[in-house]
Image (cartoon, rainbow over all chains, first blue to last red; front, side, top):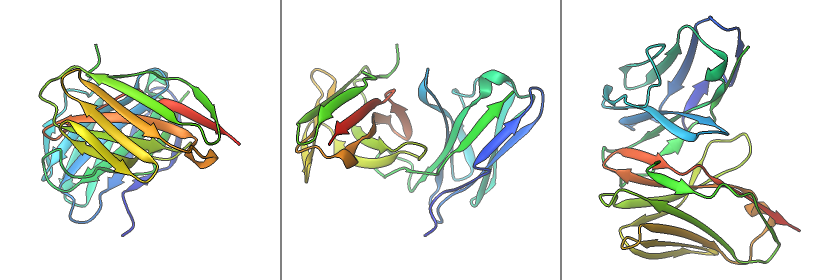
Length: 115
Length: 109
């Protein structure tokens, strides 16, 4: 299995631009999570989906952030417009099941820099 | 207050030392407790997983949960330079995961 696939691995953009991060989950995993990691705030859950349905988006910082999961094989996290404080590493993670008992597998992350 | 609190370190120890990493959590409903290891510029990987209170051992690693004091611990025996990484504790309430901020460990040869 290829594991969780994220693209791009690195993104450098200018303030005000739209940024789209992509994630392909492990086949058969029906829970998908988007996290943001910074030195100051650590690893923060932004949103998670179960069976393609958003379950909890309370961690999404503001309306500039949106996430979609149109099918079981693909999810996007979009930031529009981007700001320098959005600079972070964004991780996608997936797991089987909808309880806490299954292992969560993380992708390699997208390192976002907003100038 | 964060749901899971962790001392960020950094922690520097000589090779062969016993390492103790600790976290506290606030939600008594948490049932599953995990330790993840994250190498530089990589995603976190699950290291240890415990359900409810008690100890779990896997090779040189022992995870311990004390639900009465809401305390999570990870012990590493005979630490190796390859153990140098950031260790994150985590807990779940149903399918929502809460992570500590991570402790950076450096094991010196």
